[in-house]
Length: 427
Image (cartoon, rainbow, N blue to C red):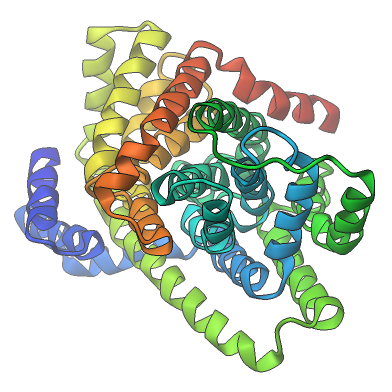
């Protein structure tokens, strides 16, 4: 069954069929070969999307839409400029810091690329950055948005593996900061080499003005992260609270959107949510087929026969995920691979929360690599550069991301200590 599924999946990718439909075709063929009634496919697909935590996805997507159009993102970028604009690299450092703010609210790498890129790239060109270099910084920093909570990929991982989404969110804080600092260090080095990125003298008055303008926006990550850490609400309830708050300040205080603007935001949110849910519905059917055919258990046994060393196992799995990321987008890769790989890593004593963050990060790198990298294509469109130019400019940043990956592989405690600490305090 596994080989039938993989054969149909790669054939679908080869002919350009959307992966969600490829999964549906595979499910029907597997059901026919197994003499299973097709009605069971409908039952399993409904079970896959009939899940309360999934409500967090459309709410966080809509939060990102409101941020982009309601003045929240722009004010956060202004604050980032006042905070780090004096560091060598100038607006490059601002773009990365802004992505850390923006990613901590929207949870979407693609939204981050589009929102920060459209604001920052023109100004970065004026500061001496080449178009490919400016685009590379804004594109690569978007991976922070899928690690720092909230994170849509971590929500999907929690649902398909029945792992605590709140713990996954908390676990993403330290790795997200590490990624941000690594990218800032790389930007510092590259700006020194290319003599790009004018710096602005640090001014306390400018920082105060930016803070006064953005402090209402800064409450958003406090609501999401603080509410979850404090046990006030779940990740799904945090998404609703964040949406209500972002709508309130955008409509009442900033007044940069009007009620009639919400219709377009809702349409875009519904389209993206529908894509995710259709994919998850068919992936649930595939996961059920593989489970009743003992595929996860068989894979665990075969991998354990190769090695039971956790570090070596992680290296193998990370290399596999990097290869998958080259040919498959993050969302389908997450819902397909997570149910198969999680039992393997947990069989050697690794925390599924740690693996969820690691998997999201590795597949996030795939968003930045050709030929399928979604953020890469968005970056090319926003920065108006060719794929070849952008990939070449991103090479130093690929190295930085791989260094962070090596650190997370060598020191799993960097990911798990904060959720473990929160659990101890909660008890």
